[in-house]
Length: 67
Image (cartoon, rainbow, N blue to C red; front, side, top):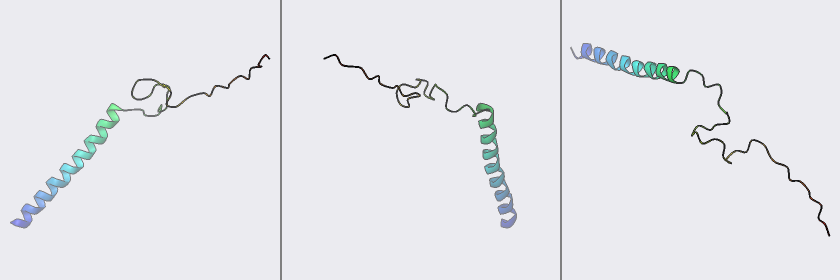
């Protein structure tokens, strides 16, 4: 009797864990279908690229000093 109960309990736990992982993966695919464009000009916090990672470096002009 305990063996039959343990088999049913083990099957229940295995199917529960499988269901959690399967539904988590399916939900992630539905919410984020294409993660190919990672690295756009807008950061993930929505604030833009305000100095954390400069996209282009500006060259300083050499000015002639008048003496």
